[in-house]
Amino acid sequence: MTMTKEIARVRIARELADLESTIIDASARAANLAATMAMARRECDVHHGLGLSEVMRVNLIQQNLTTASANTARVHDGLRKVSRTVMLPDEECPALTGILQNGDSRAAA
Image 1 (cartoon, rainbow, N blue to C red):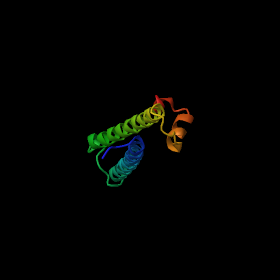
Image 2: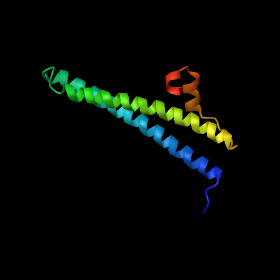
Image 3: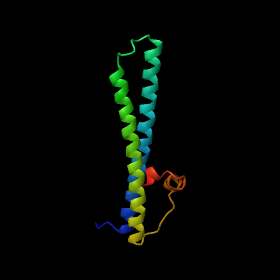
Image 4: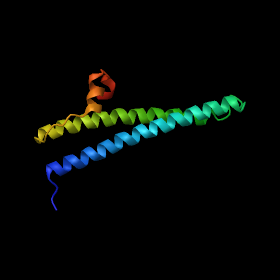
């Protein structure tokens, strides 16, 4: 079975949306973990140095997820350009449009 351009567009759009959603979910979970760790350190009267490297690692995870989100936005924009090049319908992508129109040039660059 041959994959048509339209089938490829639909599959790529679905996979890209799944990736974007997964990154958002992972970011939220990492933020929840960081908050719980901070509250546990305070409320359980843990020495300030204990577990600090783990807190730093969770912060690094959050930074990496933010970078992944920005790169995914760049891929999204690039794939829209590819779609236009092969003359497929250019459907509006509200999430990406919001990122690009809100002046976040780092996320869109």
